[in-house]
Image (cartoon, rainbow over all chains, first blue to last red; front, side, top):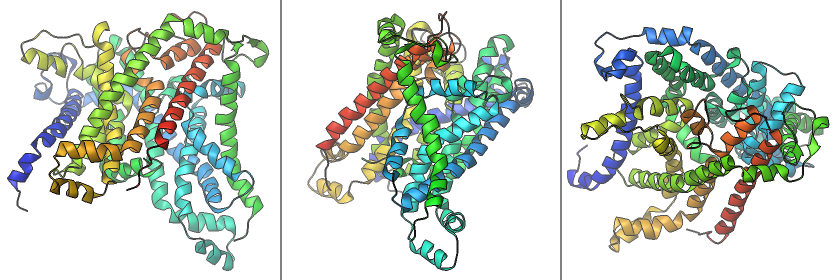
Length: 280
Length: 297
C-alpha cells in the first residue's frame, strides 16, 4: 500500500498525542521489567538497562519463594477460577429463566439485579464482615463466596440480554423431542450463548484477579492473601528487606497474567467494555 | 412453551438468596447501624444502643472527614475535567482515520486491565522515585533541581496524575463507541460546507454525544466517591491528610488505623450512607439533565 504523506502529515498532532502516551506506557513497563532483572545497586545508580552484572533471574526466584509471591499467586488463581465457575452456576440459570418467562416477581428480580450492580461496596461490606464472623467462616472460602456473590448481578444482567436474543424454536424442538426443560438449558441454550459466557467470564476473572478492597478487609492470614494485598505487604516490608529487584519481579508476576490475557483477547475485551450496558 | 414452576423456582433461588444475603440485608443493616452506637462490627445487635443522628454529627464535624471530602471533591472536579478531556482527545484522534488506531486504542486501554496495585507500584517506585525515577531524570536532564514528588506537598497531585493515567483508557473507549455511532455523512456534509475539524467537533460531535458525556460523568462521579485503592497505595501504612479520602476514613475508623483508638462501626456506617446519598443525588441530577437531550439521528 502506498502511503500518502501529505494526508498523513495532517494527522501529525494526533500521532504525537497518542504516540507519546503509548511511548510513556512502554517506557514504564519496559523499565520495570529491566529493573526486575537488575540489582538494587544498579537500580539506584541508574544503570538498569545496561545489565553490567548480568541478568538477575534470581530476583524472580526470591520473589516467588522468599517473598511468598507463590502463595499470593496461587490464591488469586484459585479465587479467580473458582468464582468464575461459581458465578456462572448461580447467575446463568436465573438469567435464562428471566429472559424466557414472566412470573410473579420476575420484574422485581430484574430490577433488583440492576440496582445491586450499582450498590457501592462500602454499603455492604460492614454487615458482610459481621456475617462471616457470626457464621464462623474463615480462610479462603470467605473470599471465594464473596467474589461469587458480588459478581452475580453483573453476570446475570449481561447473560440475560443474550438469552433474550435466542429464538424460542430451539426449546420447542427440544420439547417435541422429549428433552426436559433443565436438560434443554444445559445442553442447548447454554452452548448457544457461549460467546457471551466467555466475555463475561473474562471480565469476572479480571475483576477478581484485580480486586483489592474486599481482599484487604477479609484477608486474615498470609495463607489466604491474594496478589494485590500481597504486593502491598511486600512494599510495606521493603523498608526492612531493601530488595528492589525482588519487588519489581513481584510487580511483573502480578501484572503478567491479566496482561497476557489482554494481549490475546484485547479485541473481545474492548468490544465487551462498550457492548454491555453502556448506552448514551 | 409451558411454564415449569419448579424449574423456574430452582433456577432463580440461588440468585435470590445471593441478592438477599449480599445486598438487601447488608444495605438495611448499614442504614440501621448508622443510627446506633456500635463500636465493633463483631458486636451483636444486643450491644447496640440508639444514637439518633449523633454518628452523622460526629462524622460531619470531624476535621479528618472534612479533609477527606475536600480531597474527594478535588479528585472529582479537577481529576474529572482532566480525565474526560484527555479521554475525549484520544477518542477524537483515534477516530480521525490515523493508522494503527486499533493498536493505540488497545495500548491506551491496557492500564485498566492490569492490577491497579501493580500499576500504582510502577508509578510510586519508578515514575515518582526521588533517586532514579523517570520524572526526576527528565527534570535533571533539563538542568533543574530534583523534586520530591511523594513529599507532602506534591503527593496528592502525584496520586491524581497516576490515577488519571490509569482511567483515561476506559472513558476513551466509551467516547470512541459514541463517536462511531454518529453517522459519517454528517461529517462529510460538514466538510463539503467548509467546516473545519474544530467546528465539526464542537457543532456535531459534542452535541450528539451529550448522553454519552453524561453517562461518563456519572461513572466518574461514582469512581471518585468510592476512591480508595490509590489513596491506600500512596499512603500504605499511615493515613496522611494529603491523600485521605472518605473511604479511607471509613476503613480506618471501622477496621483500625493510625490515630483511631476506639473503633466506631456506627460512624463508619454513617460515612457509607452519606457517600451513597451523594451517588444517588448524582444519578438523580444526571437523569434530570438527560431527559431533555434525547436526540434522534
